[in-house]
Length: 330
Image (cartoon, rainbow, N blue to C red; front, side, top):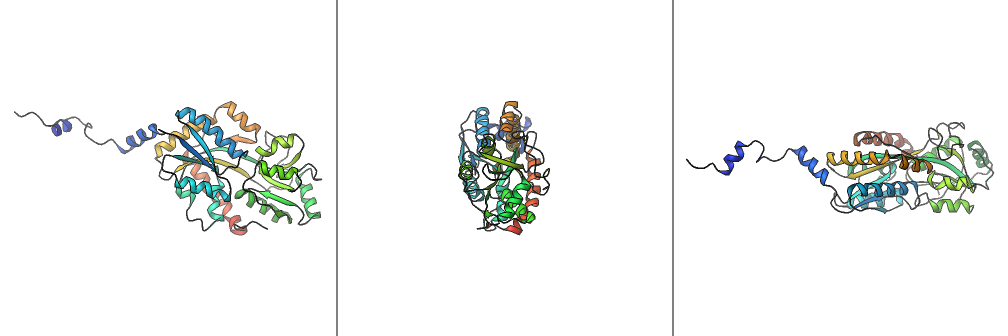
């Protein structure tokens, strides 16, 4: 009797000669990534809250992956340079870390963008809440939000203001409209140390910005945060009331920092990175450091919950984007 051939032996041993199930192949690929350096591309300007989150996540995820993770900042133009760099990167080479507005609002403000970031990227996890505040120079005779409204009405067209592109800019425009105020917009590539310097020099009078670049200077008394625009007071500045507490409930702005992967990123890999990032965010020392800078860690999310949050945010800002358009006031 002839000896059984290789195909016969494989047929008698279930699963030995068959291709692995698709889910198993995805899991194997997910566990092997990364095998080389990973970039975190971000539209964050140096010294911003987003820059801080990007560097903290790069440091801790790099330690977990035993691979170097570097931060590549490409600030400006509604996050478009950073988005374009991420989309041009080879799959597996980079992750994208940004405020949700770069993904949800940028295509609304830039209809000629040529791509939809929500379709070109894979949501992984929302990382932190970026608490925002309205700040003025200490020399300005304003101590609260009603005082700012009164001062602006007494000086129509004489106050300069700045707000980051996307949701902060739209929120500020809506506030000025509702309060019937006339201020002059001053554009910056991002809200950070340069913006604070302009305020301290007296050339910029009002800023709607994350608390990270503002809190330390406010505690020194060199500028004054007159309102926090979130749903509750900020741990970094507990004595500053919210805009709602001061009679302006519609003036609401908080940032959401999130991590994204490349298009068609395997679901198993998204889940794995989300779990690892959640473990990083659950560290109490990290959470306390974020709180001191005006940020709140958002541990416990999933890729699915983050995708749903992004859809809600796009719907929220779509009306204001249609009303105010892409061009800032001159």
